[in-house]
Length: 229
Ligand code: SF4
Ligand code: SF4
Image (cartoon, rainbow, N blue to C red; front, side, top):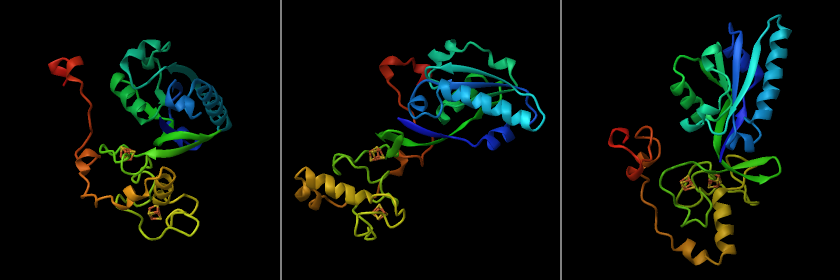
């Protein structure tokens, strides 16, 4: 899932300077699960913004709406408010939702209420950790399912940097487990250490599959008309 964190109220208020009517749009998917951008968080944010405005002698009208997924046009019909009736739309989806909303409603000023952070998993109650960086060329088959891009501070694919601490932590980020220590332990637990030792040196990565060649697309031709490809 995509994990996102709430922006500070003062940052959101700065973006709303001079606006009087605001529509907060929540998203019912990833950001609801990570407790940042669901309907409940939208109602809380609405109260916080009204109070913040009142504290500086202003009145802010804040309404709340929610779509099951802000990254899918088929759910726009779920909106019960018209974005055109507001001075600003504050999306508390991930950046994909914010970008897609601003495309669907070009006449509206769509602002982000969250900072989109990583692709992660729920590792304990109230905790989400990063597991994938979306590199476009997955090597998890070689590394026991531990990602050397997302879980190593230096994105090293050919083994550790040599700075791993004695207790298996990263030399860059002391509180983080070294990704290559995790790979070693995972492969050991699976009885695959010989396989790990025999791994061929990885060729330089094709970063065009990551972000260096621009925005990426997934097209299923059998489902798509030629003009949409
Ligand atoms: S290797 Fe790439 S695709 Fe696979 S988990 Fe890591 S970042 Fe994600
Ligand atoms: S200590 Fe481990 S996680 Fe940290 S940069 Fe080096 S190899 Fe990567």
